[in-house]
Amino acid sequence: MLKKIAILSLTTACAFAFNYDLKPKKVSEDVWCFFGKLEPPTKENAGFMSNSCYIKTTDSYVLIDTGASYGFAKQAYEAMEKIEKLPVKTIITTHVHDDHWLGNNFYKEKFNSKIYAPALLNKEYNENSEIRGLGVLSDEEKKGTKFIPADEIISEETTLKIGNKEIIITPTKVKAHTADDLFVYLPKDKVLFSGDIVMNGRVTSNRDGSVLGTLKALDMISSKDWEILVAGHGTDTSKTATDETTKYFTLLKQRVMEAIENDIGADEITQIVTMEEFKDKGLYDELNSKNVFDAFRELEFYDGE
Image (tube, rainbow, N blue to C red; front, side, top):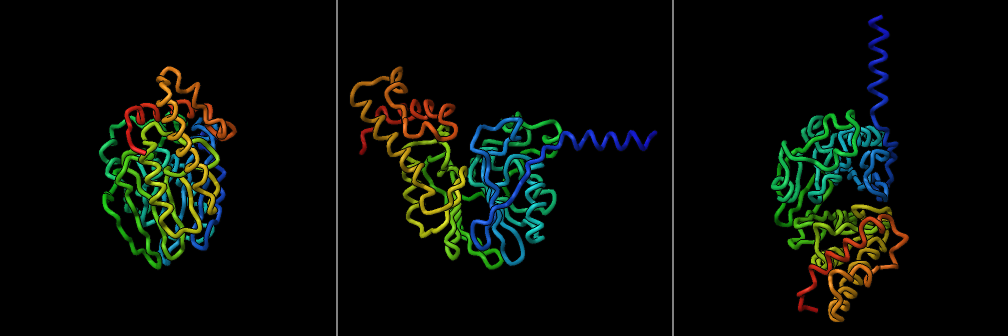
């Protein structure tokens, strides 16, 4: 009887563990990524909406953003073990939004990975913080999913030499997608990880960001000699990977400023500036109007070009 109860308990526990069905996609010789859904975080996708990438070095993996949960991170690592069983010694968190770091605790527990991140991560979160991303996780998925502080803050451009890889971490030093963003560049591989400064296949969320700052950050990214760019969200890693984001913010700035010059007010701006070219992109209905309104507030008294 006790054996039956034990088996039933195990079956019940497994029933609540979300299967992310993760399949790593090889994007360069030593980089594999798990590409998130181009949709809002829900219980049906267990928050898997951002991209998480592994860089293989001679003796370890370096991980760019750890994804949606402890369970996501565990399943991602299990998938990567099949490619090569290496420890994850290094994690780089590109920005403070929790869909990019909720897997950190799995790697900290298993490998004591060193976490590099912008200062805003440790400023905005601690072990008692309310974490929005937990809201879409089952009770089973919440187990182990928690905030882990960064071990090292990146406030200046930093070059890491890990195994056979040179990895350059660059803080934008302008408010872009958030007030404190990093992007990561592998100069020899010509691969760049933009975090959420770049998205494709969906409309960005600019709730914590800046139109002007994002355009400056995009210029910084464009100045690097990259052949492959992995966005924070989206599957285009080609030379066109930044095109949608650049077009969106360029047109958003131009159209909102034109509307302001024509005395359009805050109560009308979202009816006048609709960004119709992007209506078929993911999350347009959820995010575009708010982006337009926030751009109006940012640019209302802007007197630059």
